[in-house]
Image 1 (cartoon, rainbow, N blue to C red):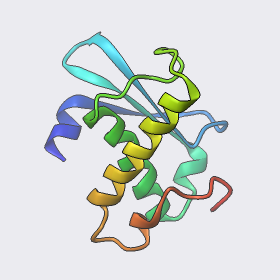
Image 2 (image 1 turned 180 degrees about the horizontal axis):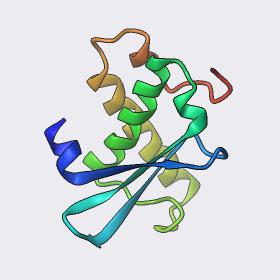
Image 3 (image 1 turned 90 degrees about the vertical axis):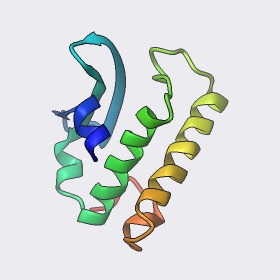
Length: 107
């Protein structure tokens, strides 16, 4: 948790996204932003836990932004799977949250 609060900034995004992460360069001492949507905040707590852990995992794994890094579909898929796996590991003590990745149509 300390690494997360020392290195990341959480910001709410618009209604169109569940969650989004983006690495940043030269923003004081932070490594990046994690954007959380209002839709995500209305979801069940265990789903919120998984999605937030998944986004933090992208940073811990030094992943690149699929858009800014111009990653292929395969590279993006690999990063998503790695983030899912790390999120599951972190949340293994919370059975409902560790099941992810969630169906994006849930509430």
